[in-house]
Image 1: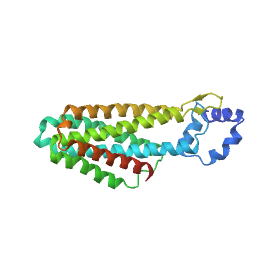
Image 2 (image 1 turned 90 degrees about the horizontal axis):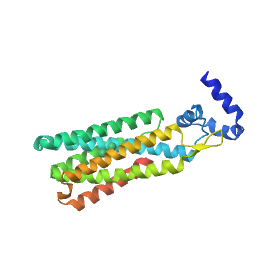
Image 3 (image 1 turned 45 degrees about the vertical axis):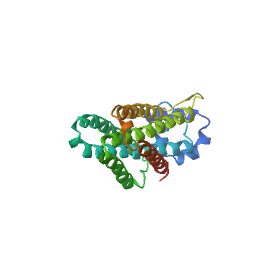
Image 4 (image 1 turned 90 degrees about the vertical axis):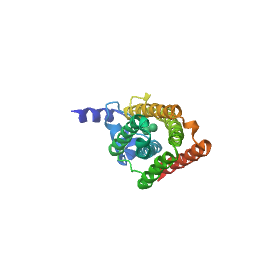
Length: 232
Ligand SMILES: [Fe+2]
Ligand SMILES: [Fe+2]
């Protein structure tokens, strides 16, 4: 019954013949748009490619965050037990972020980053090494990582808001439901990353020695990792 109504809507729409070559090459994301009740036209190849990149890089980033907090917990929880609940809270949120993007990756059949083992190794080192220096250095690492991730999510939100006003078959324009859901997810996670950033500052990240070298070095590494994970 659902199929019949979707087909009847499409057959009334004249632009169908223009879109049909693209439909033939459609990805799972596009399939979903063509079968929703909202009757959105195809996403462009550039939009599809951008969504793939968003899911790939965010999944890799959240995987990295999971391993960073695991490394910090492993090193700090015995010597500094007062930090355990703070780290646990942030880590659990990262595990949720990671599993959300894992599910999105499966749902949209997005290729994972080809160097996922390297992300795991690098993120573990980024969690363990500063924590071995001092708890403040671990917090400086968190401050740097969450600053970069907060900005990264904000950039994605700007792009999703500006580039995904898709035409409907009735001629109006709106964001497809999938894009709205993804935007809400990224907003929620961005807010939690910024809470992690505040937590790091409250726990003396600025007292780390050498603060500037640590935070600027880690920010540079994170930006390079984001650039790479979007592409590889
Ligand atoms: Fe996260
Ligand atoms: Fe975070």
